[in-house]
Image (cartoon, rainbow, N blue to C red; front, side, top):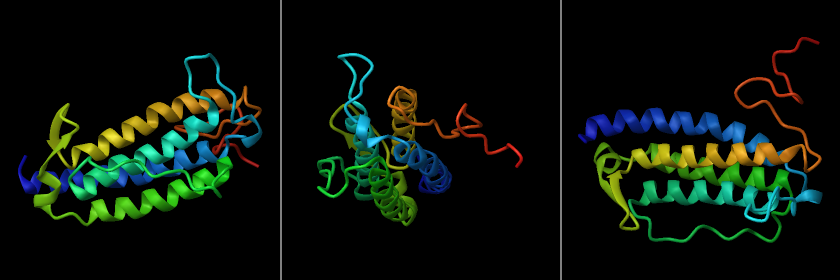
Length: 169
């Protein structure tokens, strides 16, 4: 991929990631701490683990874009980040910082081939999309947990049964 194409793609995917971040934060914040241990079946992650997985994995993917390497480990959950609202705040803070670093990449850095643990190699800019898709996938899982956990599902791509941004009054 040429640096010029990679730069255009990077600009678009970073802007998209910033839009999706707001929706993801609303789902994370809606996760009731009292029901973090909820999971629909034994094979599933519980709600609290899933919420943290969403937050930390997006940061991890985006760090790989910013640094050009997937050699680090995801951040550990800070001891003072224990509720859905706190996870959401941590997520917005950390994703914003790393998206800013991604947006500042040169065209050559956006185009550089990055190895993903020997599984595949792609231009750095494409991993922003992978990060966003991964987040959206798990955000969908978590949003399906919310009602059984006693929470409310926020509007995602339109109204939910619990939130309608288009309702008047």
